[in-house]
Length: 240
Image (cartoon, rainbow, N blue to C red; front, side, top):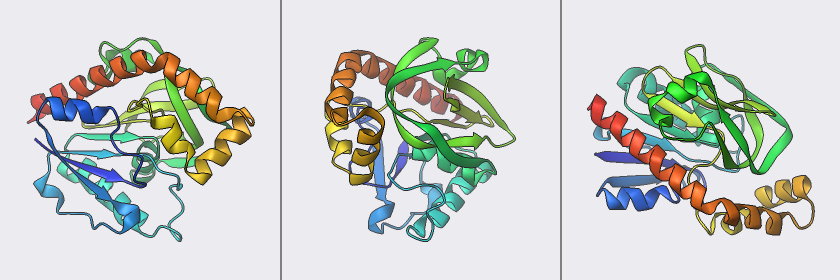
């Protein structure tokens, strides 16, 4: 298997999922779009992951590469029909690329918060073995306001109705983060836009509060990440 990963800032990589890629000997290629890396020929890859980032889906003037990225996502999901996973910004980009819409998340969801699987989510192959309600790290002020027509909603939260979705039979995405590692909060808090949003939501001690909450939930984060990873690879194996 050859995995292609779209990144939008250097510290938002596959995180804890890297240990499972290494465990299974899976080759992966990161394309740092914000640094000017070109999108390679898609046909040479078997799966695509799209990570998070501090920009918004509509920031095409400041980040013109977003236009090509959305086009690549649309080609990957609709034409190539290969396995896709999007996280946070990647979730929003999937929606935007396939005819859905994104808008402000009010209030912003920042912290370790509950996410609930829907009935469809509990039956979905990517979510098998995951708890009906789980604590997840959230760090977003934009949400999927309207999912693409062919989407199935897999998870929700009180403030965000589209926490996870499947589009067709080959594309999945989550607004929350499944790739959290012990150093994730500190790494992301070093990004000015993320730090400002964190302090605005949680107050002047927001970094410490977020770090403490993440540490308390870390074992659950890592178990959920491994389960989701194994499920994704089982889906890939079944479709290969």
